[in-house]
Structures are given as structure tokens and as C-alpha cells.
Image (cartoon, rainbow, N blue to C red; front, side, top):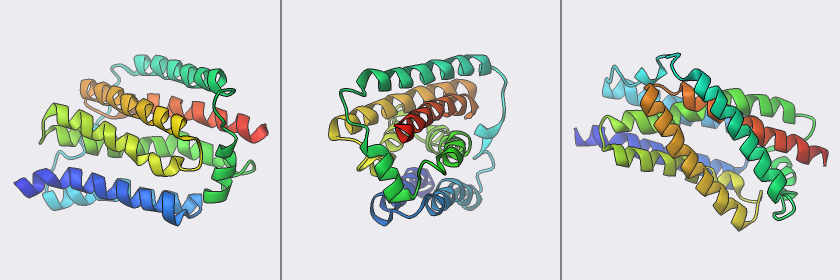
Length: 222
């Protein structure tokens, strides 16, 4: 029972560590990195469900229309806040290294950015919500305390992004981004706890990615 209880956080840490090595050390092309991420974030929860014989492991995938209008409204607000923050601070922080780092480490450039942006907005956001909010929060909450599930899932979500942000921004922006990701993770957890599924946080996450991709378009055209 103890092994089953500790398996989820250990698997989450393992998946994040592997992705950290891929992002910061190996630095493959974006397609290869996405393939590894799919294996880590999708297959690990599936393997856990099979080995643990947990029949309700993916109950967070059950759709519920309640709150979708609120999620869209919050999504638009998030989109505006992220874009507003960029325009407010673009003369304070240097964002010019972002596009160069993307091209150098993942092969993402102006010509293929639109395809990457579509994947990030729709597929990658769903994959991260499945892993961090479904597996690392709603599933953990059933076997650990509610407080632990909130903090662990949000911290894992924030720290996971460190490796991919290396070289993008200076330390102040990275720290500010990590704080925002942690708070965002807590808010996403709250949405999903209330709804019992991952779709509300996915919609808000999608709009947040729309905003960052909009900034990416702006930077590539600069």
C-alpha cells in the first residue's frame, strides 16, 4: 500500500527530471523533444494505472459542461493579462534572447513557428493538464492530503519549466515566471477540484499559451 501511495509523486519527479535533462542537456529538435514528452507524460500514468489496477485512475477525463463559460471568460482575461505584462515590461526586461534560444536549442524559427504554436496551444496544453492536474493532482489528492496535492502539483509544474527557460530570459524574469507558474498551477488545481475533471484548466491553459505564442510571433517579426 505504501509503495502504491508513493509511486505517483516518484513517477512525477522521474518524468520531470527526464524532461529537464532533455531540455537543458540533450536539447534535441522540437519534434524529438515532443515525442519524449508524450512518452513521459502520457505513458507513465497509463503504466501506473495498469500496474496498480486502479480502475478510476482516469476519472478526471469525464467531461462536464458546468463552468465552461467561466473558463472561457477567465481564458480571455489570462490572455489579456499575459499580453499586457509583456507590453508593460518589454522595455524593462530583455526578451530578445528568446527567439535565438528557441532556434538554437529546438530548431524553432520564424518559418515553422506557426505549426509549433498550434501544437503548443492545443496538444501540449492538454498533455500538461493530463499529467500535472489529472495525474499529479486529482489522482494524488485521493491518496495524499489535499494540501500536499496542491503544493506538489503546482511546484512540479513550475519547476518543470526551469530547464526550458534556460537561456531565454535573465534571472529576474525566470523567477517571476516560476512564481506565476506556481500560482497558476494552484488556480488550475482549484478549477479541476471543483469540476472533477481537467477541461476547465485546459481551456485557461490554452488561452495562456495563445498569449505566449502571440508574443512569440511579435518577437520573431521584430
